[in-house]
Image 1: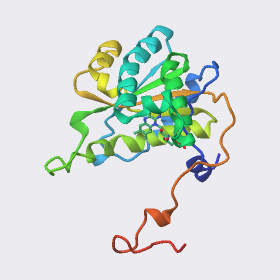
Image 2: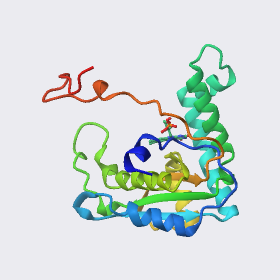
Image 3: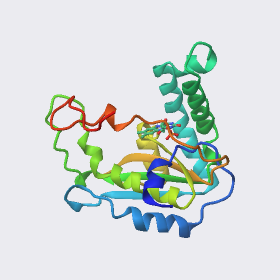
Image 4: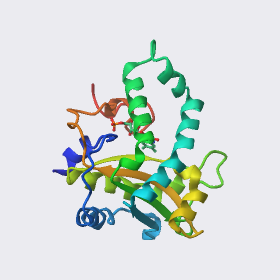
Length: 219
Ligand SMILES: Cc1cc2nc3c(=O)[nH]c(=O)nc-3n(C[C@H](O)[C@H](O)[C@H](O)COP(=O)(O)O)c2cc1C
């Protein structure tokens, strides 16, 4: 696929067939993803590819409590229990995400992405707000993985809800102390057709020229 086609059509895939993902394909994706930028070109990202059934089950068990807590905290649990009156698109997405979480162990390939904390230059650490910059040296790499998988016709779901279980995940997978978890990507062959188009806001809504609020694109 062409790059722009991949960028426009790499949706979250939450239903997968049982077909495994070949190591050769994964290595090809990583071979290209590694050209992502990182602060000081430190390339602190690390990836563990998990396919072994027992480990996938263990990862599901670590993920599920945090997914359920997220559903409770965001009102999603109520939406799922009594969907009437809520936006049907959002309800459908939550249902799919819930199904994905409950069947995570069936997803053929799990990518656990971490980053070496010493390789992060966190330039907003002193600001009086949440730090955003810490992730900037790993998420371009994660996005490259998603695009590379799409180019190979593979589906993927990026989530971050394994990160709260970092301590147990590190024990399970033997990850050293100096690594922080950044992302958890379920990968496989998509079990349904790709969507025609993704729902995203146009540049008019988020891009400005010279000063905030000055339109960059004409309507
Ligand atoms: C940081 C981040 C966290 C996400 N966490 C979850 C998650 O926990 N569960 C899930 O099913 N999808 C998760 N997603 C996927 C989003 O729900 C998805 O990107 C968004 O709804 C757009 O869906 P689409 O790409 O299929 O149009 C996450 C995406 C990002 C970027």
